[in-house]
Image (cartoon, rainbow, N blue to C red; front, side, top):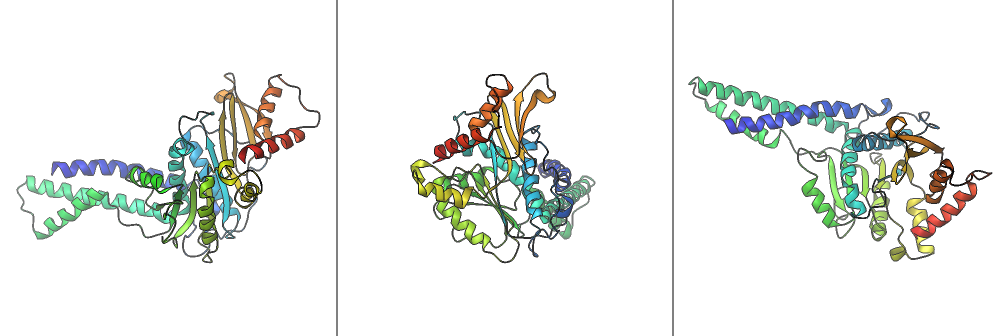
Length: 380
């Protein structure tokens, strides 16, 4: 009995962590969404409320976990504002590479995406939080039974038929961690191709992986076809590329055409949907951008720079931060904007702040126009 008890101890330790993690995740949801019922009708039935935080500056996250948690909160806050209306389309941008191209965008974003999916799933599928707590209870009860049987054997008490059946069931519970097949609502993540989806099914599952209410599919090959998506409440597209824009539009159209009211959000993480080598230089790229990109709400944005960072948590303003050892946290705010600045404008803000350039007399309007033009040309 030593081996099963050792296994139980490991499973119990993990379950105890979940006991604290699950209620903690629920606390991040706004009051109007904590009692949402998924799969029974509109996910959020509360009327639209005034945006809290609008006009305030976005602070820098304390850690990767903090960034993922904040991104999930902002996503749910945007969903809740629709009051059960049409599904939203939004994007999450997370880039801490500072221009280092050693790893692909998908590889560099993997850890953030896992944490974001975990936090988002617990917020959108509250029934799964309760299931995790039930798993913990089943695991604890199985461990108690195994300890009693071990004590009986030590005292010379022969187990009866029911004890033997209970032992087998308890050992199976400990082996599986008390997990049962999940048949409730799901959050589906789409990978660019079947290869990356297969790696995620291998590496993102298990006790330390994403919740079991997360389903994994791909936009490449046959990955997005022939699957039961009737229980999906949200679709997360992880680093979609221009070559996957066709399948992506197909999935969006099918999901947003649902009339059951359960599907609430389409979320794109680090999308790169306009590529000159794929979409061409001209009308095709512009039309694709109009259809898929221009209407996306930036619910979370974080990009590190050689000298600082640019960040935004919806509905707060964008904040341009500069490294400063004398400031609390090591950064100081040098500019707040209600729209996302272009790359040239961000550099101009830094130069002006540090005396390397004179401030424009009429603000950044011209710089915005030039920056947007240059950025649009580069994206095509």
